[in-house]
Length: 255
Image (cartoon, rainbow, N blue to C red; front, side, top):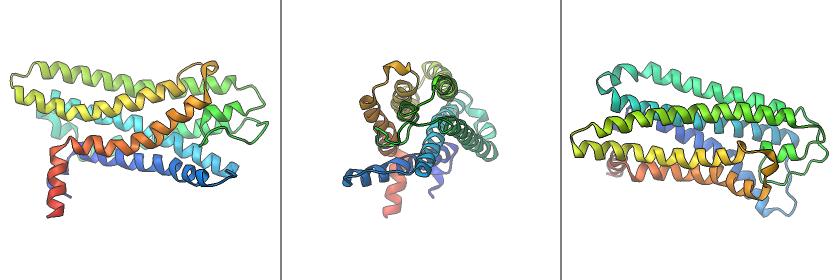
């Protein structure tokens, strides 16, 4: 690994890539196989496993993006204390907290969903997500919708508000800089992350934090495809193509 990439920012970026890989691997292979089959099937056990990993990765991605925003906040607003605050131990504990929160949320969401009785086992979707599963339920799903709104809302809103707070502080600090070159460098560093945040949280809000009466499974299929397959595919390009350090490291590897 290039020494210049051995920093907290790239440590978190590595974990974001890992979460993206798990995210797309959970959905894309089964979806591609089903496209080639006339009769599309998934077992209940497979559906439980898919939903569990789906929720875990979704929550972990939101929290990793928040942790990356915190890293940029410390680097820009408290540069003299950066090495102390973002120590290897703290970075490791932050990622442990991210994965623990993702698994906890997934256990709650998966457990609440599969406690329901289902009238049929035919999902009008390309993956086992909560909204299409609730559409199949014979029993009242009001409690599940409340749980989804509160729990998913917390794991979406809390990281998003944290990211907004960090970026308001970063932007405020940028405008106080006298160096135009310094401003451009900081803007360039933060632009990639903010692009990923906008795409990811925009689709999550539209999917999970709106009234159930407004659900459209056809729309949800497109949006779910976007944030489970397309966004994880785009993230490496968004970060790498705008990052001179990554480009230089790739040139070194080729040589």
